[in-house]
Amino acid sequence: MDKIHSDHETTAGGRSIEPLPEMIGSIQPAGGFCMRIELLWGYQRRFLLRIFRRGYLRRMAAARLGERNPAPHAMLDSRDAKFYRNQPGCYYWSADDDRFAWRGRLPFIREGLAEIIIFTILFLAVGIGLWFLFWPLIVVPALLELEVVSFFRNPARTIPSQPGLIVSPADGTIDLIEEIDHDPLLDGPAVRIQIFLSVFNVHINRSPLSGQVVSIHYKHGKCVSATRLESAEVNAQLELVLEETAAPHRLIRMRQITGMVARRIVCWSSPGQLLERGEQFGMIKLGSRTELVLPLEDGLQLQVAKGDKVQAGSTVMARYPDSNATSSDQPPVPAGEAEVD
Image (cartoon, rainbow, N blue to C red; front, side, top):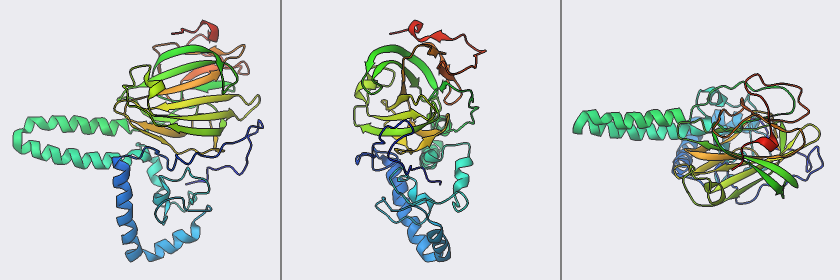
């Protein structure tokens, strides 16, 4: 687990980096049943390590980096920092010393492994019971298990490298593109694009550009179905503001929005962190919505339209005039001609 916090108080564009709000005490601000189960297992695991793996603990203590332990429990190795690594100064271990870094190379997102294990045990128990009751019914837990495993998949993506491109922050279907006369945060006109994620989509969020995290804010809310546009206003959500690394240091903002089934937002980024275009910064657990707001400038070209299917990190959503690349898949759509609801 590499260090993700910046030692600077301002961005390259001179903006102040806001501290992480106290209400965001972990990478999963709303907690959840699976998170509680995983934390409970952590207490048992640390108890066993202290008895049987004292040499290992001494090596981990010697290799530990960072300034403090923000968790309510001891941090013996990288697994104990999982939910708290977005906190300022949190202990961490380099990739060479992280004995569990291999989990990040699995075809499933590391933050969903606990859910896969928990639901597999649950569906296996239900399947065994149904086998003795009426065996054809075991297809139900089998399909549910397949959906859980599919939901937490982590496919590789090819990230475009041309300058000036904005890539999709999420997989799903674009169901809203509209112009905003004045966005107070961006201090000018903007374009808002919303992506609906069904339970069959990959739910990992990726950075739309190479930039630095300026601020992160979380708001509690309802659990209205993510298929309804009003869910973006009333549901629980986390907003992440990014400043473009290169000049002219544009600001953009993204929102992770929960749905009726999805109630757990995960964001392991922190203010000051530098994100590469297409880099993973979080996820939403089960059907949800993601919003991207871009400054509306002369020459901005939207590369998507309402109803398009997009993939996080690989689908180009917009192009600013400092990009010389051209799209071979779809002709550019001027921002002023984009379909507006």
